Length: 230
Ligand SMILES: Nc1ncnc2c1ncn2[C@@H]1O[C@H](COP(=O)(O)OP(=O)(O)OP(=O)(O)O)[C@@H](O)[C@H]1O
Ligand SMILES: [Mg+2]
Image 1 (cartoon, rainbow, N blue to C red):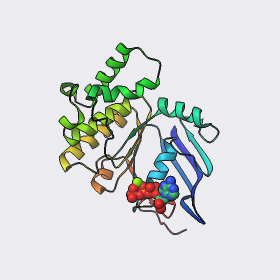
Image 2: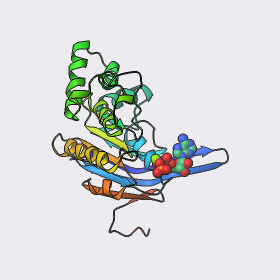
Image 3: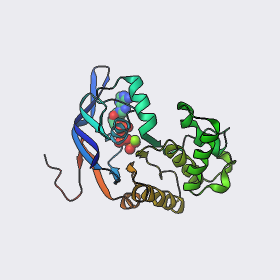
Image 4: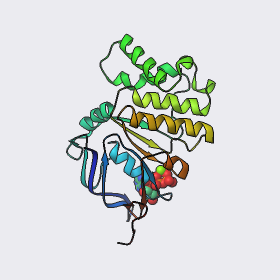
């Protein structure tokens, strides 16, 4: 079953008299539980595509069906609610709140839901346990290593139990060893927990940890080994 089906997606940004079109008639299918790596030069539209898939931004035209839900028809409020329940977003620079400890950071997405304090705590602890940070509940971001901070951020992306995780260069700021630990974790989330993962990366080693790699070139996706000639 395909978790993500993008058809004829185009995204344009108007900048004064100029129109930038990072995505041009792009189509993509991602099966449920696949760990997909997305590569491509700087400015090729990787983050733009990730933001469409995550429901953070909307396409100029085309169709985008995720987990059976057509996103094009949703208004802003409905899209925000859909995102909170269905997507976890992981950033290169973690985006943790420095004054909150690990547990409090992980709890944040659950504040958007009606949920008692006790359940919130329990789910956040379970998410931190899953990423291997049982011993770090009460450490603040400044008291964690980069790799640990990224694992807190992954726990935060997971805590609402979304089926889809999107990650924008999640290992871009990590040393090799921490990067490998994060990649192993993402791999296990796909293969042992059935999460669909779309990861943008510049690192061929990170891409090699995924099930499949696609390259974004001139607004369309190219699978390595196939011709990019239109
Ligand atoms: N909000 C926006 N308004 C106008 N142009 C934008 C906007 N967001 C992105 N762009 C343009 O769209 C193109 C694609 O940007 P995007 O951020 O998707 O690239 P990227 O592949 O993620 O690059 P990088 O690897 O450097 O992160 C760029 O030319 C960028 O300048
Ligand atoms: Mg980017």
